[in-house]
Image (cartoon, rainbow, N blue to C red; front, side, top):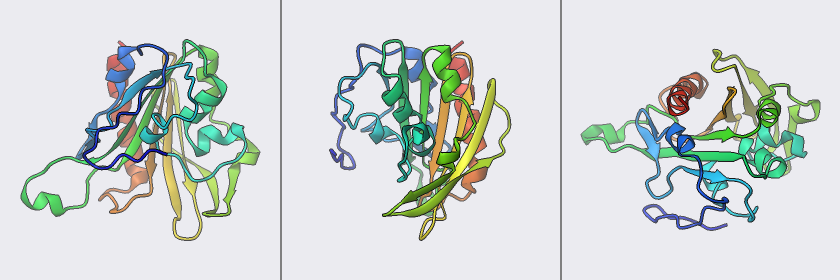
Length: 231
């Protein structure tokens, strides 16, 4: 996989087919509290279908857990982006993706403080209603509940309670074993126009706020911006 060094612009071509809907780009968060997009790898809209399924363009802007498994588990373990590419790589589907993980400049002693916000990735997906309904289904397949990987150990997908946003919203965490007790905190918001996903990873230095408490706050801000973009 191509490596982009700090300060180096990512010149990986967008693998999409034609220009994407500008509303999706406007819907993405560019910062949350004191974290923001990497300036050399900003958010982008990918219009499907893509010809190069191995392109790092989308995965470099998304956070995925180390667990694999059957394709029906993709949206839980890797993220909505992989489920969309594998199952709905057709015209009329679009994915906007971004990664928020760069500390915003701050003066003096502020630079020594742990970040107030958390690093996270966001995806905004548009397409046919049947696709949004299927991807937005919060029912976890039984075979996806317990996770295992020889390199990272075992884990589980455990539901989290979050305030309702959009037509419905749901959240979960991906637990781990060994050195990482929790890999990710994830929230999904579905509306009739788009699907929105936020993924917060386990990270160091830890943010001052608990990621489980930050998750609905990030989701609320992301939803508010997306709603404004789709008006």
